[in-house]
Image (cartoon, rainbow, N blue to C red; front, side, top):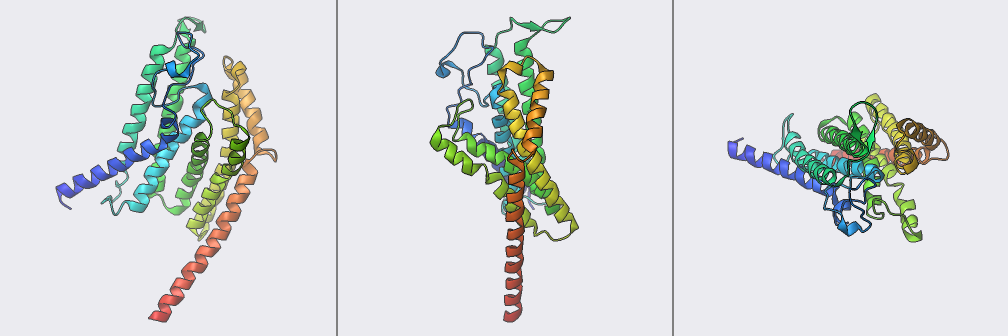
Length: 317
């Protein structure tokens, strides 16, 4: 492969990563990207249009959305490399790196821009703790930046697993990605701090099953052939179950303003919601069961289809 061809492949891979990162941010882009109203803003602002443009919706009420959008970027980039990597000229053990580089440019760039505009507008007249004074705004901003960096790192892992891992491992990444896609889809129906009316609630009642169906298709793709793929599928179901409960707990905890100044109480409340969401009252068990049914049925259909193709090929020979 010539140098020009290599550079072309790297460019195409990086471009795919950039486009994947932008696709992940689409639910926020279509809102106009005005930073959500802030409790710690330096000036009294009640009109959302007065807030600055930010590439991420920095707010304690939007942490789930931020993570979902970043992870969807990783999912899109990873699947693009896995499915179209050969056509893009991306081969070898390092074929996912150009897409990863493009994705990180978008996501880290969005983080830096958002942190800068948010930090510039927050007030710093409230101190907490002892010793050297640390403003509440600084704690708030650092927490959002740290959480976003964690989500970006997880998106990178999901990309690499979907792009290169064997099916038994990749299906676990599918579970993480499926949860993110569910949040991503819901974001088109709900503003970051909005509430759903009757019609939107009806649609949300349907989209809640999207992660389960996507994971079921991922399990069917493995074919459930061999111990490794079966174990991987079981782990993926557990990730979906626990992940659904985690999303519920995180959303409830971060949306409860009264606990935000008290980290220990906030963590305890989130743990209570998590335990409740794991049980029959939560959505995790139902989602895992739907994914199991879709995956099992899909694997049987796929086996039948492949067996039919083999018989047809043998008959033609």
